[in-house]
Image (cartoon, rainbow, N blue to C red; front, side):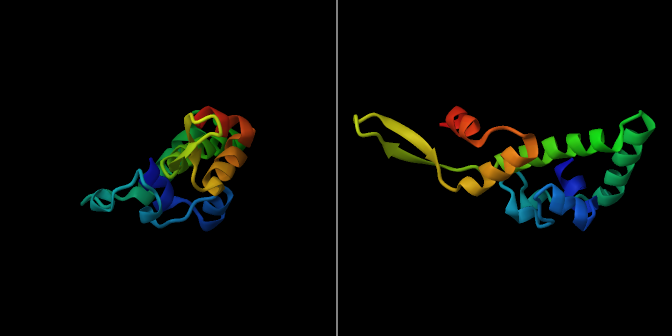
Length: 119
């Protein structure tokens, strides 16, 4: 679904989901497997969106599902760095909080809460 989303979503939807079409920007996606012969990810994305309408998803519900998919894709880009506390205990911190911020915006999770859960 990640490849379908990045291939088939409009620029406007990608912007709303805080995504870029470039597969190489996401750690979960391998460039070696980005294209499968005979598979049209953009067409499959349209099929998924159509299926969501057929089974009764409202527009805001379908968008909420895609927000979760985007958040999961962005989770793969979270990197940690080791740090030592003043008391000598080791801990980890998130290297770049921008991805975390965007995940929190997509999922409506408080950034402090999610950061604490990760580290």
